[in-house]
Length: 487
Image (tube, rainbow, N blue to C red; front, side, top):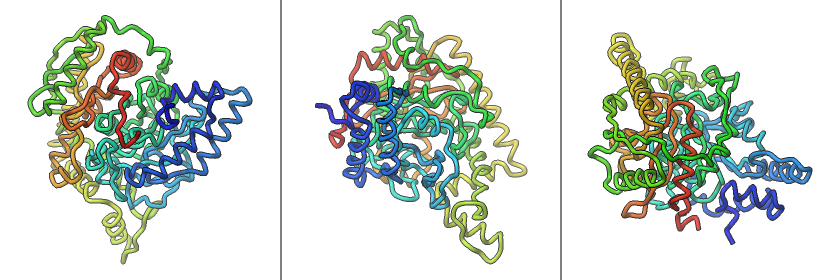
């Protein structure tokens, strides 16, 4: 019999609706697994066992009373960048150690309303700055496929928790690839929604014009179920778009025959790990066998993406992280005067990577450099968005690898910031343009590590990407494979 922790959301809902298992059974199985194996993984920063049991009991009572909700009784966990009322929310940083918000992020509140059970808060690179979860101020998260490898970042804990069967789904955030890259490294399905599709209210900011929350799960169908709950307009977020949310699950059954999939040449250029390029090409051929039409395209402004993204993102980080001053919330280190208190608090509270990005962002925003760097980066961003518009006039989706290589070893790239940055080279364009991106497992390399592909779509075409993802997973079994550690 399949273990309770290896179920998909769809399977778990069917079993609970049939009365074969209870939400309490499902929750206890996950809590026991977290206790048993998370010391080896490091996915969780906080486990909310008492809350989970209370919510599971409430879910069972609601179902017994004839109620049903989209995620009733489903155990989930949340990246520690999303505010949770009364539950410590640190962003993986010492500067927010002990901080307990007085409200829930909108995405979290919507999960609760849908009946989800909260298992806890997940590990991450500090303030979402990193691609490996090695920048967590507490401890690194590990990849369940190989404990010597990183799970990706910054949502590494979110990916590791699902891959190691310690949650049926999780929420992460994607500023430059932080959902798609960990999903690729850990062999999961996950989506970075279009900018404005999911409310950012309560999502602690890194780069406000990039950040989006989105779900990790085992299948495209499960991703569709969670996205359908958290998506939609929120008056508390001025960047939230008043765009209707489709029934993503119903849309999975649609036809993909005749859909046009573009393959940007620049995303298959030199520098890709050969296994990664081959797996992505094989996935494209699979889509073609399912009736999709493949077209090669050129993304002429691809070389602008990396510098434009990092200039803008670091500038926004500099502005957003100015609020952590030891006065209003979070850590405080007393100094001789106010300025000294600021310096000591921020000096001790922030890690090296966060300090690096704050300093670079402050530099690019300073007098004499603003137009030369920030202004030009914004102009490049406009060109990139326009080119995506032109590509989506020709095709219905784009297909590319998620990352140039599979998961690297701990410590392998931490001393080379540029190599770490290059881990995001294929994902950041979607954030610059505000488009959506679905990550799907599409194979394994020679070392047995997962490989992911990404499908990119025009703004608010998540339904089409999920339909493509469901069709691909109906014809392949990459998403059904689990690490032996999780068995």
